[in-house]
Length: 265
Image 1 (tube, one colour):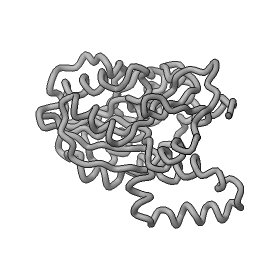
Image 2 (cartoon, helix red, strand yellow):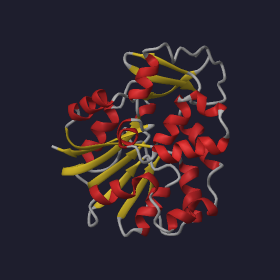
Image 3 (cartoon, rainbow, N blue to C red):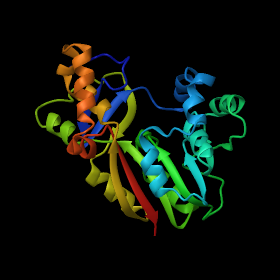
């Protein structure tokens, strides 16, 4: 069992059919400290050019070009920056005040608001779309309060693009063979990884209709779960991961993250 708590992916156990990560509490001070290391003009260059990473096709397929969009839990606001460069009307919201203050200094014209996405001082039916990337999994009691608040501020028929860590087929296969029995003594809850079936049920139970499902960042998942990749030469690892991008099953089922597209009923 691993006891290395310097790696937030290193201490995991299965609880109630969820993969649970223990490391540090993902509170405001944690994120402010983590993001302070990423806030440089160089970091924002691709986003100022409109680069959307994994989300290029997903965002352009599902986000309304003429609607008002909120990224709930925007962190360093890199996607707010990129969406603005792509002519979307996007606001960012996060409780990391210092991070957003620094982002505004680096990128002119960002529309950022400081607040808690579990209790927003925003009127009902305010947004045409909401993006939430890797946020709701960090609440120990579960994601419902976030989903309910985002549902409240979405317009009827508005679209939610939400992602969480994915307890995917490979991880479940490993769990069935005795993986994820790490020593979590003295560590704090960090996040959940959900099966697709469970997270779909949670989203639907909070007033949404499912429109589409994606997984992404599969290279991250393969690197994390296939320990033999660490034992082969680096060029072979890179070749394997490059080839894996062209295997449909890997891309659809083995992502590190699960993204759900849903509409407010």
